Length: 205
Image (cartoon, rainbow, N blue to C red; front, side, top):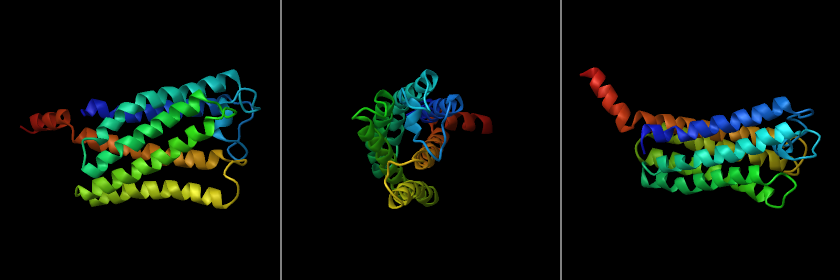
């Protein structure tokens, strides 16, 4: 996968982040401590409006579709790292599902679970693969992102029901950790891409 292909991940992150941030700013009554992020995409919710549903739901669908090709980047690595491509694709499909099925729909919860669990597994497998390939520092740091992401949900679930006011807090933290993984991984693959190597070789000759 070329360096240009690696850009699919960060572009998807930017689309999702802008959609969510825009929906929060446009919301008439959203609060991190009382809402779930998905409230922004649920018609009829006090925190939602036609604009927030468009930004939130539409942004997630578009980000999930744009991000899917980034899974191919993971196929360029160590055999263990390649295993991360499947849960990454599952996470992107879960993101699309969250956007397609608002909070009141039966498929919303399975889609959200697919998104966050896929993100954790993909991040962890990639970290193990990177470490096995010899880049121990980056591998351990990447695996640490997965542990931190799982820890966020463990902390949230042990303090009460998972679905309760303030669900946006672990959702935002988890999404942020996944975004760091995607952008960092994209940068590393871009640096290792043939286009960049040729450019650097030419500059040094």
